[in-house]
Image (cartoon, rainbow, N blue to C red; front, top):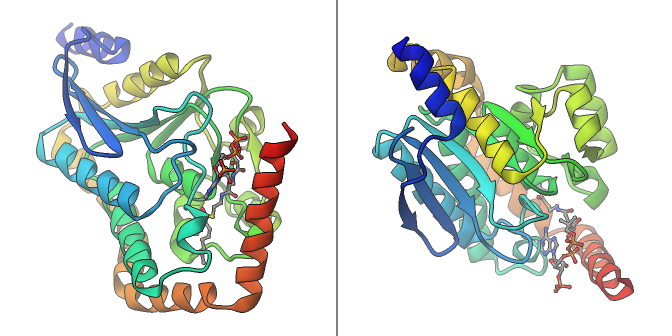
Length: 281
Ligand SMILES: CCCC/C=C\CC(=O)SCCNC(=O)CCNC(=O)[C@H](O)C(C)(C)COP(=O)(O)OP(=O)(O)OC[C@H]1O[C@@H](n2cnc3c(N)ncnc32)[C@H](O)[C@@H]1OP(=O)(O)O
């Protein structure tokens, strides 16, 4: 009976009194009845993952880990974009010291999210390409609003998704589906993503997506938290360890990639395309 009531409370999102912490580019709101934390990205216009947003994300994840939240729901303050992925301006004509800090922070933030001890879910309330898809697939559950797209489109930018991007993708999709999608740089519509299993559910609004994420987190209400968390860690240990062991090599590979003139040229054309699209509208 107690469990049923708690599950219902967790699933409904519960009463709305919130305890909130605001970083510059992220907000954490903990529902004091359900104990679930909503981590919102807020870097207009597209939540491009630059150094500062990645730092704020990491510090918010640490805060949620530390404040005994029952779960983490990742979402965005934009009505149409979850995250446009890595901020291309961090990679285009980069300052190499900043670029180093940027990639190291991306590694750090991914290790924290993918390895988080609390249940995690993404309420995908907008487009979610590349790094946005990485964040979503690093969570344990995904609920997405219709008429948006999600996927790892790196090959479309002439880039190769690192092994750990692939690990998160592969933790969700079967190998054959993941390999084909990555090779094609395919972006899935919400409906396609549901069909292949890239997302778990759809929702008609951000609020409904958050409710469904909360219901997923509620399914752990009766499970021993330590046993749940250690089981999750065991599933993810090899992926996490692979990056931990190869962090330096991974960083050097990234720095080498972005210093290639052909890649710089490609990124310039891609950015130009994004801006032209804006002018056409
Ligand atoms: C070895 C390295 C491996 C890792 C490699 C890559 C990982 C990545 O994550 S690379 C980033 C990949 N992301 C994308 O390809 C997405 C590009 N953006 C879009 O497709 C659209 O912007 C999007 C569908 C997200 C949103 O569309 P709109 O709502 O129509 O917005 P706009 O296109 O008008 O964009 C507004 C504004 O933002 C700029 N923008 C968009 N995305 C990015 C980005 N990822 N980085 C930097 N800037 C971005 C866009 O140019 C517009 O700028 P202004 O014209 O100056 O307003």
